[in-house]
Amino acid sequence: MYYNEKIQWIRNCKNVTQKELATYLGIKQQQYARYENGVNIMPVTYLPKICEYLDVSSDYILGLKDYTKEDKKEKISS
Image (tube, rainbow, N blue to C red; front, top):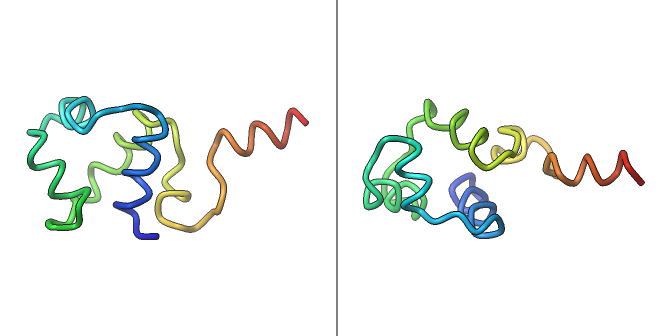
């Protein structure tokens, strides 16, 4: 799964719209949709803000780890 697909999947799981995330990034929804759909390459400078907003690690989005922050919290509390 590519980074843009992971971002889209996480965003959908958290019930966040493209418009909400685009507004947080300070861009138009249409521009954000092009990034998420892989039409344009998303600037890496957006990654920290996306991770903060969606509460997920950049390592997970980039495929360096196969679990989210929430998965790790569940493992620790079990």
